[in-house]
Amino acid sequence: MEKSSAILWGGATCASQYEGAWQAGGKGMDTQDCRPYIFQKDQATTRTRLLNRAAIDQAKDPDSSAFYPFRQGSKGYEFWQEDLDLLAELGLDIYRFSISWARLFPNGTEKEPNPEGLAYYDRIFAYLKAKNIKVFLTMYHYAIPLNLVETYGGWKNRKVVDYYLNFARTVLTRWGDQIDYCLPFNEINTGYFSPFNGIGLLKDDKGEYNEEDIFQALHHQFVANALAIKMGRQICHAKFGSMVAFFNYYPYTCKPEDTLKLIQEEQRHQWYFTDVMAQGSYPYYMEQYFRSHGIKLERTQEDLQLLKTYTVDFVSISYYQSSVISTDETDKTAGNLVVSTKNPYLTATDWGWQIDPIGLRTALNKMYDRYHLPVVISENGFGAHEQLDSNGQIHDQDRINYLADHFKQIHLAVEDGVDVLTYIMWGIIDLVSAGSCEMEKRYGVIFVDADNLGRGSYRRVKKASFDWYRNYISQQKGVSHGS
Ligand code: BG6
Image 1 (cartoon, protein in one colour):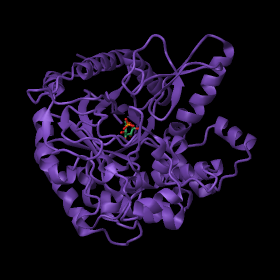
Image 2 (tube, helix red, strand yellow):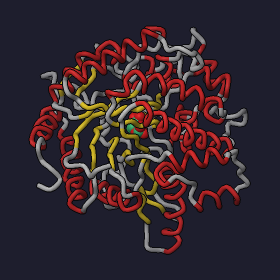
Image 3 (cartoon, protein in one colour):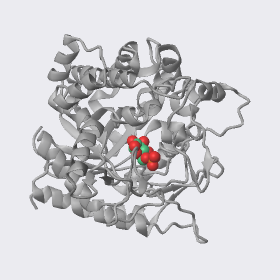
């Protein structure tokens, strides 16, 4: 790909966290529809990232008293036009969204897609085209038709690759010419940390996962990624990318053991995935890990050739926080997917995610240095508790500060020479948290009037950050990398 001339400024949602309407228009039940909201002290738990058979049975029980937030999402299925009007008013260059697999293929196994599902996305693509907003499409953002988990055991089963490709073929054939950038898989390293969300794997009866299943499922996703790229190159002109949650680890001290541990965790948590998808083969350190842990994967010669041939055009990261590695007992704090040591130099969000704008510049440099491919920030944002004030407004100055500080570092990374293609703000419209199923963990510049139990009008309200981001984007128009 040619070096990009200017950064595209965007925003993102994804089907399972935003659309709701879990049974409307013929949609089938998917894995995210099964995750209940579980209140725990002053914050919901991330325990529902890891489900077992009993939890699925409970979710399918029509008499279940639990509340399932993804079934409502932000009611985007209903509010889509108002939302896209707001995104157009913001002046977004690019919108990242995903297609619900179960809305097109309710059981995952149908040969032909559900016409009502197609019609819903037809309207979205047409609207974006009319408004000249580029499309950044995520094909798989966690939710998988439940039937593929119940019948086949999720991604650990090779057959799911075929069903995914049927879904991908529908998407690329119908809308490929309107897709600018395509991510076959959101945050592919999620499968490692959060197997239910990432690879549709249920915990066994002992409440555990089999590590071999996890790596086999990830291998199937790598193969599906390569085959989707192969298909895409035949059908359309979209550019294809990889994505990982980026942790940007620091060693807690200069003790050699801390750095050694850092390198090993960074390899397994973060590099391995992009190495396979951008460099086209399994890295030496993973082969060694598989050997030393007795993990035997089914990988054919044909698979390995596919991985080598169909590598990505760009690499992408979600970046919310940096993390710290220590070999000692230390004070821990949460982050996206990982728990890590507290960094005494940083502040954190209400959820403990450590705010580190400079870390983003570091992350971008690391990615570009390693892969020499354009880098996309496919997610970044500030999750916070927010309520309408007595004038019905939200003054989210903390979010504005977070964004301004991160944007400054993105420009500095560009000055460093990094080819930054796009910045995508996560949860541009408030939506349900993928980690903890909370509606009240808000990322948007657009507020959605609903609480953790789905109570509220779902009315949309522009936050102060809406005007701030709109001004920022308009000032950036025409600012090239060289100016
Ligand atoms: C990323 C996911 O992990 O982080 C999103 O791709 C998710 O789906 C985002 O929403 C923020 O995480 P959380 O747990 O705050 O929703």
